[in-house]
Image (cartoon, rainbow, N blue to C red; front, side, top):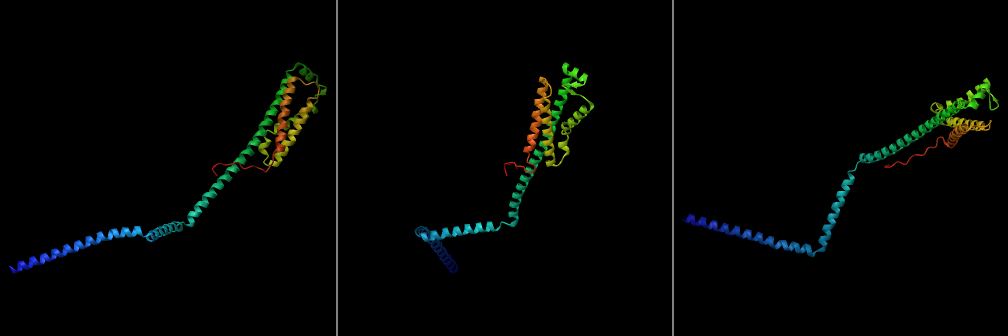
Length: 238
């Protein structure tokens, strides 16, 4: 009986001690929370301190990010810029090569067109009865068609015929330019002089006008050709 009473007294004391401890902890929490909120609201100095801490932490993070940028990353950006520059220079070189090739093809095509006009003018002249009868006598418009005359005519025809392939054979631009100027000038003057020999027929005047126009264009274009001075094209996206 005494042991039971002693046990009950010990349990009672433990129960009241636990109850008092729990009550004190709850009361301390309830009392501490509003005090903290009031202190935070009522003290602008603490707010400024916290904002300064946030700014410092953000700046520290930014510094750490920028400090992580390596020279390899900088080289990547510089390499990309150099690649764009190289692409632009390659495009410019390709553009200049295309212009160079197109000019040579233009000269070759124009001389081929002029040569065909020369040949067809002579062929149609053989269909003219008045001109054909003069060919049979050996004197055309007061000019004797001798072997020397035919040799001179054959040598002259080498100018337009040879210029069909010379633009593709002559690699030096300056030499090609002077060949076109000299050939175009000779062809223009010679064909213009034939209009004053005898009385030209309408078809001959038509052929002569076309031939003189083409050879004059070749001469003027070659004179305007600035060898070694090429304009770089405007490239989008560079």
